[in-house]
Image (cartoon, rainbow, N blue to C red; front, top):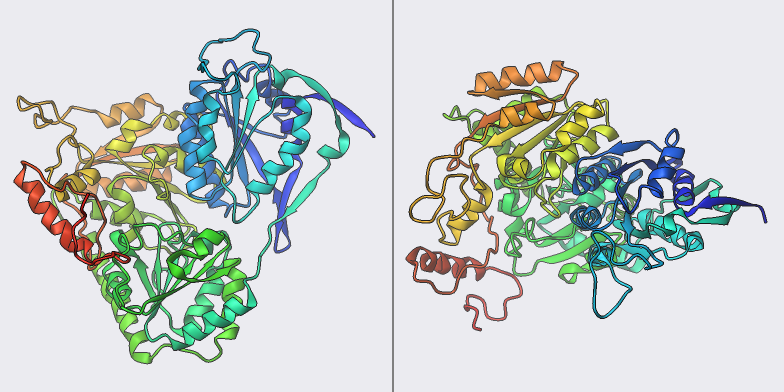
Length: 628
């Protein structure tokens, strides 16, 4: 057997270079590059290998290990999971900084490979710098913290173990159902050890991405439910986009007349101007979707996890006889809500359903009502976009960005109030134009995510919209964008605090306590003057062109300038903490509220909470307060 003598690290990189994926006859190389920050734990191993193979495996220097995983997440999302990137860290804090990014990948079901430096396997040097010690075992390190947030985890203790571990990494990363973060813990000495690897290991391998079909009997049962439904509703999730099932969804909708509401991951599955598009579902939903959802007698979930936001904490679907059909490649999601599980690919399952339902159509009055709600909602969006408020409202900011963007341009955000407002207001004219991470709702994702999205789609303008809270948590990837000459348009929306969680604090009766970016006052609360944070100078200091927009006219001019530029530009705009895009219709989020308090605002909030919670599905005694 022919062999090649390589270090473990060299073997890993060479193996990754030869992995390809194929779906529907289209083939591409799976890994397009590696992010990293070098340190002890990788400098003589994977870092050396990347330097050796840099021509074929580009290396990108990040400023924060969490951020580089977020960039890789956004890159894979934008590529419908058909391409991925690897991320490399040193030991200890470098590795644990990647844990949040790994969780983001796994929650969102997006492929990312984390190569985490680990301590010396030979242990002679222990304890080394940055090593956690445990009195009960020698076989544990900081990297064990990846286990609950990963879909695959392995510690390579001998160089030949890569021969069996790397194919398992690829099996997970290319699985439509099981994908997420794959983590290899790599002891720093073992990375440098050489082994005679079989040359067969480095031959080109093509991983076929399957389009699994749902069970025939289950489809027959689902068809019977659909044909019996009077007011069905589709909830389109990320599985629609990852399957590239948008055309199949539109054909099914136009044939049957069933309207569509969307999750964050599924936004753009049906474009905003389709007459049967009801927009966002649930807590951050549109009035159209939240009027129809409680009346629906059948919910068809497509590629969605049914988290508490699209279900309004299980209060959205109130029809007494509501039933569920779930199309999903992941079995656990397909079975949720006691559904008929159609465990299979969204595209082919929709195509088969479209044939199987025959001539079924919803009643014309239901179709017309949904179309009227679509039209009414678009009128509401226009109203919010043109509110003409002082200071400028967040809705107006979104409207100005929308007006500045071409149909294929991309908006990126993650946490705070921006995701909810964008979900309601952003008009998807292209199925990939909305790249908002909300599975993990991780603060600090925004700029790093924008970087990954732009790397995946360099022909599109990428607008990063980030609140001041998230910006303060992680803004360093502005420098990475400048370094790599990757242009972003970054809109920093400053309302002097955590306005989104502040609203939740108000809803539970705590009046926004601890959520304002102000000096601490005599009362012990942050109720003094606003902190004088200069976001323009911060952005300039990180290398970007920066400007502050004082009003809507200034903001629109700044967007024009930023769009014409070839360099990353940051536009800072102030909004009002108290001004918010409202909630619409049946939008409620179960945010646990104190059962009793000396604060009467809290007690009043608890009364409202118990009333709202009484509409929640699966309560043993509807309306009964929890008893400890």
